[in-house]
Length: 265
Length: 181
Image (cartoon, rainbow over all chains, first blue to last red; front, side):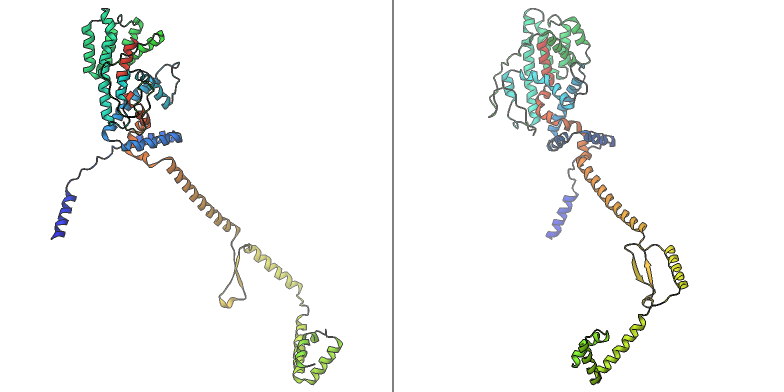
């Protein structure tokens, strides 16, 4: 009797629908050929790097892969911008690595000038949080600081009567509420108030006509650099600083250590 | 001289190479011993026969020309016997008088060597191509996940190291723009 019951139970288990992993997406022959061609053109060191990266990618979970995909989209946009610079600013045919470095240089410059209390909150030890949680927290902190910095930065213009307080408050509010439009909102605000921002009319025209809002805002920074004017420091964050997150969380004024390539956030 | 000594000197006696004293003693023993005398007589008959065979064999010139012509015709008609050729008896056990020459001609030998060389070279080439192909194109190049995310995987080290910057690139851009305004 017992063997019969065992057999029945096994048959039931085998028959019961199991959760089957989704099959990998099909890839076209052209895509495979393109990858093979790219691979053949790589140096041995690059191949070794990719092989390591492939090992890491396979270990990433679904959420971490989504984070990496978003980051990659942003990196590709930044790299495209770096490659579109005029020839006197960037040589033609930049290598991928160099294009990445240039693409991230401006971001790194601003990052390194963030208030120390804010950065201390970001610079947790690697492995402290899962990637997706870390990204969400970072975004939240930055948006909060952005709203605060906007009000602080425009306070002199409000005090001089060049900008209305309610307009600035509305801009800060909308920047927080509509994350996908904040770049366009700021560009429009600057274009609408050229006197308050001390921007020359020809620069304003370029900012207005730029292909995308981000490019327009970059034109402002470029114009400022040409003028040779000093960039005002970003205002210190008044919120209480985060406690140190553990040993190894050093002085935030020191250059930030690159995160380890194992990717644990 | 006794019988044993007589048999020892018998070959020299037949060849007329014995010294005078030994010759006299041997003759004396052959006359007195009937058995040794008979043996000496038999050997002398055999030596006489050998002497007949040693006489010069005279072949007529016409016969010599005929033999030479036949040999020349055979040489022209049949391949030259090369090194490595083998000679096998022909016609079974009874055909011992004639031989059949089995030739391995130069052309045939070279053909076999060339075939062997081709086989070795082909195997070596195929193995090399296979090894190089495996070394140059790892298996994961055909993995659908890899193909689909190849560009991302190439950038993965940067995405890890500079991920925070990329996560808040919009906010950093806005902060920078406000400072420049």
